[in-house]
Amino acid sequence: MTVKKVLLTGASGRIGRTCFKAMCDTYDFILTDLNVPDYEISSPHRFIPADLSMPGSAVELLSAGQPDAVVHLAGVPDADATFEQLLPANILATTWLLEAVAETSCHRFVFASSAQTIEGYSVDVQIHPGLAVAPANLYGVTKCYGEALCSFYATQRGLSCVALRIGAFESKCDALKNARDFSAWLSPQDAVRLITRAIEAEDITFFIGYGISDNRFKRFDLSRTREVLGYKPADDAFREFEPGSLIF
Ligand SMILES: NC(=O)c1ccc[n+]([C@@H]2O[C@H](COP(=O)([O-])OP(=O)(O)OC[C@H]3O[C@@H](n4cnc5c(N)ncnc54)[C@H](O)[C@@H]3O)[C@@H](O)[C@H]2O)c1
Image (cartoon, rainbow, N blue to C red):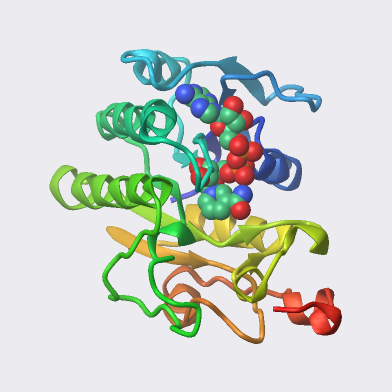
């Protein structure tokens, strides 16, 4: 199926902005967020503000235009957040949105999960598909919940879902603090490659993909993500940022 119209939640955030700018010639976007984006939006794209944690807001959003795919980036990406801070965006919004999307003929739901789903494993463990989740904070727990929801809507309600365990999305080296961050780095260009493949890859019911660049030491084993999604990362934190001078 040709994907043309994409609903992008969290469009004003760091990854949302990056995706829109890189993909605006490929897809017609319905952009949504609590906050108005700080970039220019022109036809055929449009922005509809919404608080997705409110019941009914996702249904209203979808009635404004039937997307072929949904990329759900809205969330609170904070490993130190309390449950009260996480509940609206990471639990309620994801639940209402999936329930609403499952009622449509949408072809693909892409969920921004996180490497925090597995940060309970020590840094010398490489994460392979099939390893049990091991969150080290409540933020990670909310992303495990999102993955479980995707699995439920895929296997029980017929919605094709791809959850992406995004690592450390950064454009600058300064933000990468330690060995773990280098091994989990996801460059903006690779994020665009990965999310594009998550939208486009065929024949998927439910898949958990790993969202890191081609770092020479990898927190995640990328082999299944390359195979199932056709993801071809090009960047490597250890080449890009020469971390030789850093103390790990
Ligand atoms: N940045 C990373 O390194 C990273 C790593 C792993 C996972 N992720 C996940 O990727 C997604 C995007 O990350 P980001 O770095 O762009 O985050 P961000 O904080 O820059 O953007 C998130 C956006 O979600 C919006 N939002 C929050 N609550 C909302 C609500 N109730 N209704 C509508 N919009 C709401 C915010 O206004 C914000 O613009 C998040 O779900 C995050 O958990 C990010």
